[in-house]
Every structure is written in C-alpha cells, then in structure tokens.
Length: 269
Image (cartoon, rainbow, N blue to C red; front, top):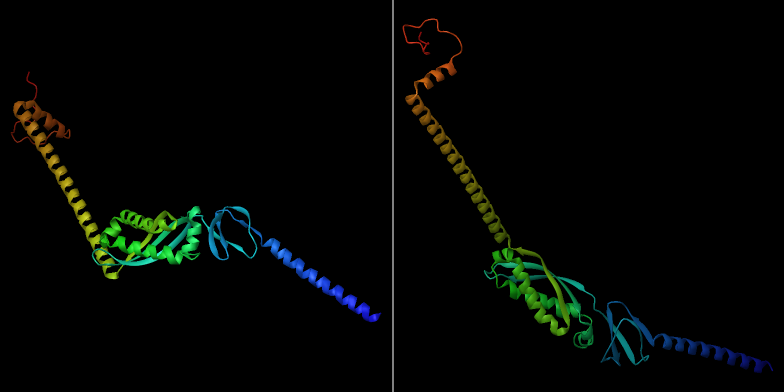
C-alpha cells in the first residue's frame, strides 16, 4: 500500500513537471508568433533565414514560430558624419568632414537586407561618401574649395545620389562641416588675405586723400572767385572801398592824419 502511494505521488509530480514545461513551451510558442513594428520602421519577413520579400508596416504582425523571423529596419531620416581625405585639383591635401542626412525607401528594405544586411552604414554609405568627396574635390583648386563651397557641396551630393539610390538609400541633404588644408597652404591663404586687406586699406586711404584734395581745390576756387568778384566791385564802385574801411574801423578817430586824405569822404557843403 505504501509502495503504491509513493508511485502515485511520483506520477503526480511527473505530471506536474510535464504540464509545467508544456505550459512554458506553449507560452513561448504563443508570444513568439507575433510582434510589433514601431513608428518609422519596417519589418522584413524571413523564412528559414531567407528573404521572402514580404515587408511589415507599423503595427502588430503574426508569423509562424521557428519558421519565420522578422528583421526590423529604420526608415526615418538618419545622420551619418564622416571624415574624408582627398587632394584638390592643384594637388593640395584636403581633409573634409561631411554630414549626410538620409533615409531608406520603405519598399526597398527587403532588398537592402538581402544584399547588404543591417550594417549598411559601414559597408555602403561611408565608402560612398569617401569616394564622392575625393572625386568632387579633385575638380576644384584648394582656393575654389573655399570660395565655391556651395558648388562643391552640390557636386558631392549629386555623386552620392548616384551611388546610394540603387540600394534604396535616399539622400535628403548633405553639408560640408569643415575643410582643412596643410599648414603651409593655410599660411599662404592668411598672407594673401592680409595683403588684400592692406591693399584695400591703401585704396581707401588714397580715395580719402583724393576727396580731401578735391575739396581743397574747390574751396580755393571759391575763394579766388570771391576775390575776383570783390576786386571787380572795387574797381567799378569807389563807394565799396569806403564801405570796407567803415566795416574795419573800430570807431576811433586817428590822432594824427599826416596830411593824408581821410579814409571817409566827408559830405561837402
């Protein structure tokens, strides 16, 4: 009887353990049969590791456990900043820092996963930036890279579009964060800017001198004209002379006339 009870108890324990494992298995099976795709993402359905071509949009999805898997890729705008070394048209060494804004086409994520995988930044984008920067900067001299920066940016952007769009990567925008040159070139540019500034200052000074000289000439011409007019007035009208004497007279009669003619004609009776 005791032996029977022990056997029964062992059977019950075994059943509980079995049912527990079965329950856990069923729970795992249940929860692995569905999942969710977040905002700005797409899911690539795989069957035994192979790409099926089916793409899940945002929201809940269902799949066959142990047969299917879903790989999630981000299609929101992302940023990649890369440093690139190159040479200009005049063989100056140039170090550039480029920032790329891009996104994956929603209908191309399956192809991206199949051909490249999830590591598309280091395998596709970074090398494309390096190659595009080198090809574009080689079309410009070092000085033009500075003075025509917007044109250089457009060249790099167009080149990148041609390299990335076949993979389903959309180039939203591209910015050149920095151009850096060799110390000798930087010194040459600084010297050139200093010389141009000095030349501009000298030109401005010369213009100022010319302006002041012209003012002096016009002022002298004005004074000469005034003297000429006054001389003609004195010659033509003696009363003007007396008027000038009166204007300069301090109101005191001279102590000694010396037999000279008075400077003011007295009225005759």
